Structure formats: structure tokens, C-alpha cells
Image (tube, rainbow, N blue to C red):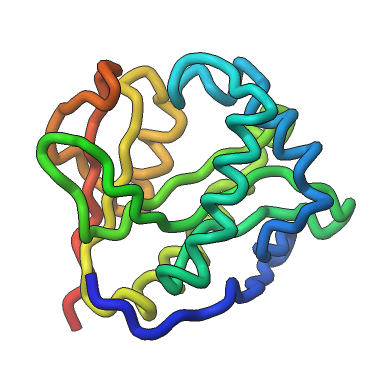
Length: 182
């Protein structure tokens, strides 16, 4: 993965969302999101402690200055409320087949925001950003086999299951979105 330079997290606006850097005042809402069994059912299988959420929160903040990309906090413009996060990361996962060096996308919304089209709205602009930033690289995402909503969303944006795998003993699919060739 070539890095085009270290960038701060840019803000991106859509009709209903502001995608922006995580802020310290997001942390309580962030902790609540990751403590919710509905959120973690397909991501690790159990709610996160406050400490685990803090580690994850800092990991996403640190991605931007180190890697030049990362996750955005998703804010609902109408209310100013933190409602989730989405973006790209490089986690150097111990996974077969290896995906290291390939931008990995992920997304999570608080449960009461599911089914409103917010994830689709966010992914649409993030994929555009990624296509410019990563210059003709495929994207991957890891999705638990039972997470049908995320599988449908990934497929909507051109991800196709490449292979079944497992991460920390949990079965999942590795989905790949081929780079646009221009």
C-alpha cells in the first residue's frame, strides 16, 4: 500500500451526515455503542468494556497521523449526534489469507440508526475518497457470515466474497472490491 503522505482526517459532508475526526467528547457515545450487544454481535461477539473502547478509540485517532488514512466519526447533521464510524484501516491482522497492505473498510452504526440508509450514504463518499487516496488498489472488508445487512451493503458497493476465513476463531468472509481501472 503506497502512502501518499500523512494527512489529517478531512471532514466530508453528505446530505444528512458529517464525517469527521473523532473527538474526545464523542467517547461516552462511542463507549455506549461498543457496549451494545446488537453492535458487537457480529464484531467479536461480546460487548466491549470502557477500557477496550478507549483502546479502539485511540487506535482510530492514531491511524491518521501514522498512516494518512483512518476512520471517520459519523455525525447526524440534523442533531449533531455521534451515530457511528466508518473508514479504512490497516490492522496487520493475523489472518489467512493475509490482507496486509490492502485497505480494509469497516463501518458501525448505533442500533437506532440502522435501516435509515446512513451506512450507505457514508460508504458512498468514503469509497470515492478511497479511490482517490489509494490510487487503483482493491479494498477488502471482513464480515461475519450472519451479518446479512453488512453483506448486502458490501455487495451494493461492489464487494464480492473472495474466501471464507476466521479471525480469532470466529468464521467470517473476506470480501474484495476490485479497484476501478481507468
